[in-house]
Length: 107
Image 1 (tube, one colour):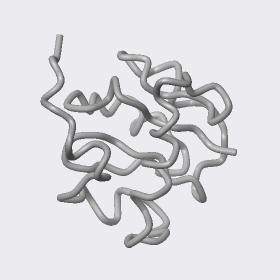
Image 2 (image 1 turned 90 degrees about the horizontal axis):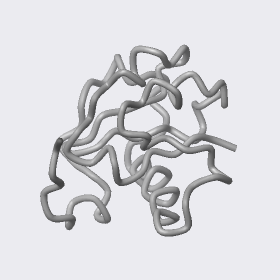
Image 3 (image 1 turned 135 degrees about the vertical axis):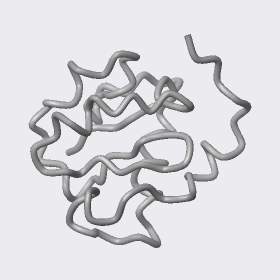
């Protein structure tokens, strides 16, 4: 099991979750952050600090955002498991689900 980042993160990328993650498994794409499913230890430290409530336990992702589980997993298909986001920095890409979204209004 793992945590998933969904639509509210798109074009926001607050990064508070990155600071709280004890295993450095939250990676940055161009428009959104992604949780590596194999590196996440299910500690839940990221969930309560997200100011836009974009982080959900895998089984609790709202149905209308269910595709974000797949997006978080598939984002790492060509990346593999780097063993920590800090080592690799931000990626100049997003999952296709995110790439095609119109710009999200940021409050």
